[in-house]
Image (cartoon, rainbow over all chains, first blue to last red; front, side):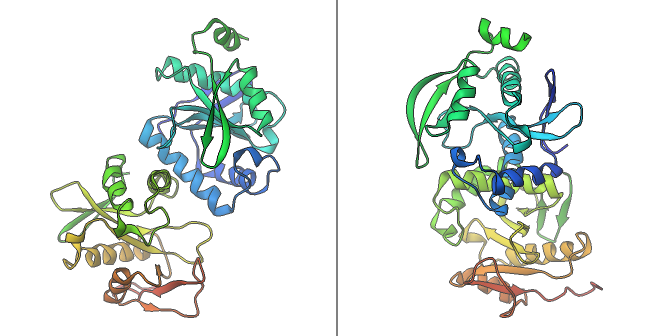
Length: 180
Length: 171
Protein backbone atom coordinates (compact mmCIF):
# COMPACT_ATOMS: atom_id res chain seq x y z
CA UNK A 1 0.00 0.00 0.00
CA UNK A 2 1.86 3.00 -1.30
CA UNK A 3 -0.70 5.61 -0.17
CA UNK A 4 -3.80 5.67 2.03
CA UNK A 5 -5.89 6.49 -1.06
CA UNK A 6 -9.31 4.88 -1.29
CA UNK A 7 -10.68 3.61 -4.60
CA UNK A 8 -13.43 5.63 -6.26
CA UNK A 9 -15.48 4.35 -9.14
CA UNK A 10 -17.60 6.06 -11.76
CA UNK A 11 -19.45 4.73 -14.77
CA UNK A 12 -16.29 4.16 -16.81
CA UNK A 13 -13.43 4.95 -14.45
CA UNK A 14 -11.58 3.68 -11.41
CA UNK A 15 -9.68 6.27 -9.41
CA UNK A 16 -6.98 4.70 -7.24
CA UNK A 17 -3.81 5.66 -5.44
CA UNK A 18 -0.60 5.87 -7.46
CA UNK A 19 1.49 2.74 -8.02
CA UNK A 20 5.06 2.53 -9.27
CA UNK A 21 4.09 1.60 -12.83
CA UNK A 22 2.17 4.89 -13.20
CA UNK A 23 5.51 6.68 -13.37
CA UNK A 24 5.89 5.68 -17.03
CA UNK A 25 2.71 7.30 -18.43
CA UNK A 26 3.10 10.24 -16.04
CA UNK A 27 6.64 10.84 -17.26
CA UNK A 28 5.36 10.57 -20.83
CA UNK A 29 2.96 13.41 -20.19
CA UNK A 30 5.47 15.67 -18.45
CA UNK A 31 8.21 15.13 -21.02
CA UNK A 32 6.28 14.74 -24.27
CA UNK A 33 2.73 16.04 -24.13
CA UNK A 34 2.03 19.07 -26.28
CA UNK A 35 -0.64 20.09 -23.74
CA UNK A 36 1.71 21.05 -20.90
CA UNK A 37 1.60 24.80 -21.60
CA UNK A 38 -1.03 25.41 -18.93
CA UNK A 39 1.03 23.53 -16.35
CA UNK A 40 4.26 25.49 -16.73
CA UNK A 41 5.57 23.74 -19.84
CA UNK A 42 7.24 20.39 -20.42
CA UNK A 43 9.68 19.06 -17.84
CA UNK A 44 12.50 16.56 -17.76
CA UNK A 45 12.30 12.91 -16.79
CA UNK A 46 13.79 13.98 -13.48
CA UNK A 47 11.10 16.62 -12.96
CA UNK A 48 8.47 13.96 -13.58
CA UNK A 49 10.11 11.61 -11.11
CA UNK A 50 10.23 14.30 -8.44
CA UNK A 51 6.63 15.34 -9.01
CA UNK A 52 5.46 11.73 -8.95
CA UNK A 53 7.19 10.74 -5.73
CA UNK A 54 6.29 14.01 -3.99
CA UNK A 55 2.71 13.25 -5.05
CA UNK A 56 2.94 10.01 -3.08
CA UNK A 57 4.37 11.89 -0.11
CA UNK A 58 1.49 14.35 -0.37
CA UNK A 59 -0.95 11.57 0.48
CA UNK A 60 1.05 10.77 3.60
CA UNK A 61 1.30 14.39 4.69
CA UNK A 62 -2.29 15.41 3.97
CA UNK A 63 -4.30 12.20 3.87
CA UNK A 64 -5.39 13.12 0.35
CA UNK A 65 -3.72 13.79 -2.97
CA UNK A 66 -3.80 12.85 -6.63
CA UNK A 67 -5.64 9.73 -7.71
CA UNK A 68 -4.58 7.99 -10.87
CA UNK A 69 -7.59 7.84 -13.16
CA UNK A 70 -7.82 4.49 -14.92
CA UNK A 71 -10.14 2.89 -17.45
CA UNK A 72 -12.11 0.34 -15.42
CA UNK A 73 -12.42 -2.04 -18.36
CA UNK A 74 -8.71 -2.22 -19.19
CA UNK A 75 -6.91 -0.75 -16.16
CA UNK A 76 -5.07 1.69 -18.43
CA UNK A 77 -3.99 4.90 -16.66
CA UNK A 78 -5.63 7.92 -18.28
CA UNK A 79 -4.48 10.80 -16.10
CA UNK A 80 -4.58 12.20 -12.59
CA UNK A 81 -7.29 13.93 -10.62
CA UNK A 82 -7.37 14.74 -6.95
CA UNK A 83 -6.95 17.24 -4.18
CA UNK A 84 -3.71 19.16 -4.09
CA UNK A 85 -2.58 21.22 -1.13
CA UNK A 86 1.12 21.93 -1.27
CA UNK A 87 2.55 24.34 1.26
CA UNK A 88 1.96 27.79 -0.18
CA UNK A 89 -1.36 26.84 -1.78
CA UNK A 90 -4.18 29.23 -0.83
CA UNK A 91 -6.48 26.26 -0.02
CA UNK A 92 -7.04 22.66 -1.11
CA UNK A 93 -7.41 22.48 -4.86
CA UNK A 94 -9.38 20.19 -7.15
CA UNK A 95 -6.62 19.50 -9.68
CA UNK A 96 -6.52 17.34 -12.79
CA UNK A 97 -4.47 16.56 -15.85
CA UNK A 98 -5.07 13.84 -18.37
CA UNK A 99 -2.42 11.89 -20.22
CA UNK A 100 -2.67 12.13 -24.01
CA UNK A 101 -4.65 8.87 -24.19
CA UNK A 102 -7.18 10.20 -21.65
CA UNK A 103 -7.94 13.44 -23.43
CA UNK A 104 -11.16 14.45 -25.18
CA UNK A 105 -13.48 11.76 -23.89
CA UNK A 106 -15.00 13.40 -20.86
CA UNK A 107 -12.85 11.40 -18.47
CA UNK A 108 -11.53 14.44 -16.59
CA UNK A 109 -15.11 15.63 -16.09
CA UNK A 110 -16.25 12.26 -14.83
CA UNK A 111 -13.25 11.96 -12.49
CA UNK A 112 -13.63 15.55 -11.26
CA UNK A 113 -17.21 14.89 -10.19
CA UNK A 114 -16.10 11.84 -8.22
CA UNK A 115 -13.22 13.67 -6.54
CA UNK A 116 -15.38 16.66 -5.63
CA UNK A 117 -17.98 14.36 -4.13
CA UNK A 118 -15.39 12.36 -2.17
CA UNK A 119 -13.64 15.48 -0.89
CA UNK A 120 -16.89 16.97 0.36
CA UNK A 121 -18.55 13.85 1.68
CA UNK A 122 -15.58 12.05 3.22
CA UNK A 123 -12.99 14.75 3.92
CA UNK A 124 -15.42 17.57 4.65
CA UNK A 125 -13.55 19.82 2.22
CA UNK A 126 -15.11 22.35 -0.06
CA UNK A 127 -16.40 24.17 -1.91
CA UNK A 128 -13.02 23.55 -3.56
CA UNK A 129 -10.99 25.81 -5.80
CA UNK A 130 -9.12 25.15 -9.00
CA UNK A 131 -6.20 27.44 -9.73
CA UNK A 132 -5.98 27.68 -13.50
CA UNK A 133 -3.51 29.56 -15.71
CA UNK A 134 -5.36 32.14 -17.78
CA UNK A 135 -3.95 30.55 -20.93
CA UNK A 136 -5.23 27.06 -20.05
CA UNK A 137 -8.51 27.25 -21.94
CA UNK A 138 -9.24 23.51 -21.83
CA UNK A 139 -8.92 23.41 -18.07
CA UNK A 140 -11.12 26.50 -17.74
CA UNK A 141 -13.75 24.86 -19.96
CA UNK A 142 -13.71 21.78 -17.73
CA UNK A 143 -14.01 23.83 -14.54
CA UNK A 144 -17.03 25.63 -16.00
CA UNK A 145 -18.59 22.35 -17.12
CA UNK A 146 -18.25 21.17 -13.52
CA UNK A 147 -20.19 24.27 -12.49
CA UNK A 148 -17.23 26.27 -11.12
CA UNK A 149 -17.21 30.04 -11.43
CA UNK A 150 -14.30 32.46 -11.70
CA UNK A 151 -13.75 34.04 -8.30
CA UNK A 152 -10.57 36.13 -8.47
CA UNK A 153 -7.26 36.65 -10.17
CA UNK A 154 -4.31 34.92 -8.58
CA UNK A 155 -0.59 34.89 -9.31
CA UNK A 156 0.54 31.27 -9.06
CA UNK A 157 4.33 31.05 -9.01
CA UNK A 158 5.11 33.36 -11.88
CA UNK A 159 1.91 32.60 -13.78
CA UNK A 160 -1.23 34.70 -14.10
CA UNK A 161 -4.04 32.46 -12.98
CA UNK A 162 -7.69 32.56 -12.01
CA UNK A 163 -9.17 30.92 -8.96
CA UNK A 164 -12.35 29.05 -9.88
CA UNK A 165 -14.75 28.09 -7.11
CA UNK A 166 -16.45 24.74 -7.48
CA UNK A 167 -19.90 23.70 -6.40
CA UNK A 168 -20.26 22.31 -2.91
CA UNK A 169 -20.53 18.53 -3.14
CA UNK A 170 -24.10 18.70 -1.84
CA UNK A 171 -25.23 21.45 -4.19
CA UNK A 172 -28.20 20.17 -6.23
CA UNK A 173 -26.28 20.62 -9.49
CA UNK A 174 -23.33 18.64 -8.08
CA UNK A 175 -25.66 15.86 -6.91
CA UNK A 176 -27.23 15.79 -10.35
CA UNK A 177 -23.81 15.40 -11.95
CA UNK A 178 -22.94 12.50 -9.64
CA UNK A 179 -26.20 10.79 -10.55
CA UNK A 180 -25.89 11.35 -14.31
CA UNK B 1 7.65 0.28 6.38
CA UNK B 2 9.06 -1.05 9.62
CA UNK B 3 12.62 -1.56 8.46
CA UNK B 4 15.33 -0.02 10.62
CA UNK B 5 19.10 -0.01 10.76
CA UNK B 6 20.69 -0.24 14.17
CA UNK B 7 24.12 1.05 15.13
CA UNK B 8 25.58 1.45 18.62
CA UNK B 9 24.16 4.93 19.07
CA UNK B 10 21.52 5.17 16.35
CA UNK B 11 18.26 3.83 15.09
CA UNK B 12 17.76 4.65 11.42
CA UNK B 13 14.22 4.37 10.13
CA UNK B 14 12.09 5.41 7.16
CA UNK B 15 11.19 9.09 6.94
CA UNK B 16 7.81 9.84 8.53
CA UNK B 17 5.40 12.80 8.11
CA UNK B 18 6.32 13.86 11.67
CA UNK B 19 9.88 14.63 10.51
CA UNK B 20 8.59 17.57 8.48
CA UNK B 21 9.36 20.38 10.90
CA UNK B 22 12.93 19.23 11.53
CA UNK B 23 13.51 18.96 7.78
CA UNK B 24 11.84 22.33 7.25
CA UNK B 25 13.92 24.13 9.86
CA UNK B 26 17.11 22.70 8.39
CA UNK B 27 16.24 23.37 4.75
CA UNK B 28 15.15 26.93 5.45
CA UNK B 29 18.39 27.65 7.35
CA UNK B 30 21.77 28.64 5.93
CA UNK B 31 23.11 25.22 6.90
CA UNK B 32 21.31 23.90 3.83
CA UNK B 33 22.79 26.23 1.25
CA UNK B 34 24.28 23.32 -0.68
CA UNK B 35 20.77 22.02 -1.41
CA UNK B 36 18.49 23.21 -4.20
CA UNK B 37 15.49 23.72 -1.93
CA UNK B 38 17.35 25.97 0.51
CA UNK B 39 15.22 28.90 1.66
CA UNK B 40 12.28 28.12 -0.65
CA UNK B 41 9.30 26.91 1.37
CA UNK B 42 7.40 25.48 -1.60
CA UNK B 43 10.42 23.51 -2.83
CA UNK B 44 11.25 22.41 0.69
CA UNK B 45 7.77 20.97 1.15
CA UNK B 46 7.94 19.09 -2.13
CA UNK B 47 11.44 17.87 -1.35
CA UNK B 48 10.17 16.47 1.93
CA UNK B 49 7.14 14.88 0.27
CA UNK B 50 9.61 13.33 -2.19
CA UNK B 51 11.57 11.81 0.69
CA UNK B 52 8.37 10.09 1.83
CA UNK B 53 7.46 9.07 -1.70
CA UNK B 54 10.92 7.67 -2.41
CA UNK B 55 10.46 5.16 0.39
CA UNK B 56 7.03 4.20 -0.85
CA UNK B 57 7.88 3.70 -4.48
CA UNK B 58 11.28 2.02 -4.09
CA UNK B 59 10.95 0.49 -0.63
CA UNK B 60 14.06 2.39 0.42
CA UNK B 61 15.14 5.98 0.72
CA UNK B 62 17.15 8.31 2.86
CA UNK B 63 17.15 7.06 6.42
CA UNK B 64 15.88 9.29 9.18
CA UNK B 65 18.72 9.22 11.69
CA UNK B 66 17.56 9.12 15.30
CA UNK B 67 19.53 8.85 18.51
CA UNK B 68 18.69 5.62 20.25
CA UNK B 69 15.85 6.20 22.70
CA UNK B 70 14.52 9.29 20.92
CA UNK B 71 12.43 9.23 17.74
CA UNK B 72 13.41 12.77 16.67
CA UNK B 73 15.08 12.90 13.28
CA UNK B 74 18.47 14.63 13.50
CA UNK B 75 19.39 14.18 9.86
CA UNK B 76 18.87 12.15 6.70
CA UNK B 77 21.47 9.74 5.38
CA UNK B 78 21.07 7.22 2.61
CA UNK B 79 20.08 6.35 -0.94
CA UNK B 80 18.62 8.87 -3.33
CA UNK B 81 18.15 7.59 -6.84
CA UNK B 82 16.57 10.02 -9.32
CA UNK B 83 16.66 8.94 -12.97
CA UNK B 84 19.26 11.50 -14.07
CA UNK B 85 21.91 10.56 -11.51
CA UNK B 86 24.54 8.47 -13.21
CA UNK B 87 25.26 6.14 -10.28
CA UNK B 88 23.86 4.90 -7.00
CA UNK B 89 24.29 7.59 -4.38
CA UNK B 90 24.38 7.75 -0.63
CA UNK B 91 23.73 11.31 0.45
CA UNK B 92 23.49 13.02 3.80
CA UNK B 93 22.21 16.10 5.53
CA UNK B 94 22.70 16.57 9.24
CA UNK B 95 20.19 19.02 10.66
CA UNK B 96 22.02 20.38 13.69
CA UNK B 97 25.48 21.84 14.26
CA UNK B 98 25.66 19.99 17.61
CA UNK B 99 25.79 16.71 15.66
CA UNK B 100 29.04 17.72 14.00
CA UNK B 101 32.18 16.25 15.47
CA UNK B 102 30.27 13.51 17.25
CA UNK B 103 30.88 10.85 14.60
CA UNK B 104 27.14 10.31 14.26
CA UNK B 105 27.10 11.17 10.55
CA UNK B 106 29.96 8.74 9.97
CA UNK B 107 28.21 6.02 11.93
CA UNK B 108 24.99 6.57 9.97
CA UNK B 109 26.70 6.71 6.57
CA UNK B 110 28.69 3.54 7.28
CA UNK B 111 25.48 1.71 8.10
CA UNK B 112 23.67 3.07 5.06
CA UNK B 113 26.51 2.10 2.72
CA UNK B 114 26.72 -1.41 4.16
CA UNK B 115 22.94 -1.78 3.75
CA UNK B 116 23.15 -0.59 0.14
CA UNK B 117 25.58 -3.40 -0.68
CA UNK B 118 24.07 -6.11 1.49
CA UNK B 119 20.36 -5.53 1.05
CA UNK B 120 19.86 -3.27 -1.97
CA UNK B 121 22.45 -5.19 -3.97
CA UNK B 122 24.37 -2.14 -5.10
CA UNK B 123 27.76 -2.65 -6.73
CA UNK B 124 29.20 0.77 -6.07
CA UNK B 125 28.39 3.79 -3.93
CA UNK B 126 29.13 7.42 -4.73
CA UNK B 127 28.33 10.67 -2.98
CA UNK B 128 27.64 13.74 -5.09
CA UNK B 129 28.97 16.80 -3.30
CA UNK B 130 28.99 20.47 -4.27
CA UNK B 131 32.62 21.48 -4.76
CA UNK B 132 32.42 24.13 -2.04
CA UNK B 133 30.59 22.04 0.56
CA UNK B 134 33.52 21.73 2.95
CA UNK B 135 31.67 19.94 5.76
CA UNK B 136 30.34 17.32 3.40
CA UNK B 137 33.72 16.78 1.75
CA UNK B 138 35.25 16.27 5.18
CA UNK B 139 32.70 13.57 5.96
CA UNK B 140 33.27 11.82 2.63
CA UNK B 141 37.01 11.73 3.29
CA UNK B 142 36.47 10.47 6.82
CA UNK B 143 34.46 7.63 5.30
CA UNK B 144 37.42 6.77 3.10
CA UNK B 145 35.83 8.02 -0.13
CA UNK B 146 38.02 9.60 -2.79
CA UNK B 147 37.24 11.85 -5.74
CA UNK B 148 36.67 9.90 -8.93
CA UNK B 149 37.60 12.53 -11.49
CA UNK B 150 36.62 10.30 -14.40
CA UNK B 151 33.07 9.72 -13.14
CA UNK B 152 30.20 11.85 -14.36
CA UNK B 153 28.12 13.75 -11.78
CA UNK B 154 24.63 15.20 -12.06
CA UNK B 155 26.14 18.62 -12.86
CA UNK B 156 29.58 19.48 -14.27
CA UNK B 157 30.76 21.10 -11.02
CA UNK B 158 29.60 18.32 -8.69
CA UNK B 159 32.38 16.28 -7.12
CA UNK B 160 31.92 12.53 -7.35
CA UNK B 161 33.28 10.81 -4.25
CA UNK B 162 33.49 7.05 -4.58
CA UNK B 163 33.32 4.98 -1.42
CA UNK B 164 35.47 1.95 -0.74
CA UNK B 165 33.68 -1.39 -0.66
CA UNK B 166 32.95 -2.07 3.03
CA UNK B 167 34.88 -4.82 4.78
CA UNK B 168 33.10 -8.13 4.66
CA UNK B 169 31.21 -7.37 1.46
CA UNK B 170 31.93 -9.72 -1.41
CA UNK B 171 30.79 -8.48 -4.79
